[in-house]
Image (tube, rainbow, N blue to C red; front, side):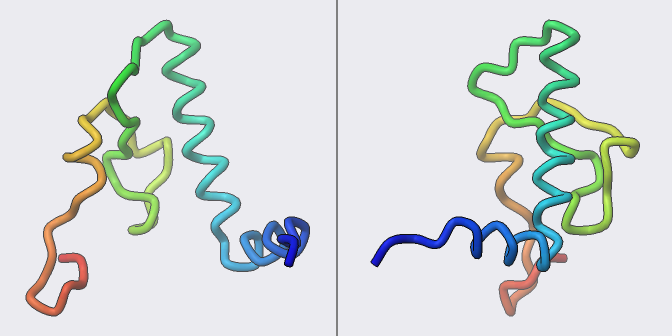
Length: 79
């Protein structure tokens, strides 16, 4: 079967993932415009987008290992 990209995009927008992706892109472009070298680093939000954060809360460069892991409770959910 072929992938229905139009349907995937619609589903992404319904879930609210589209706005978060746009927020991440704006953060990366903001650093690129300043001339910051972000090779090998992730652009991290001070307050995670999943927790209601935005670019207005601040962004920083972090290692991928640091940015992509969060403290977890014993049941696996985020603290």
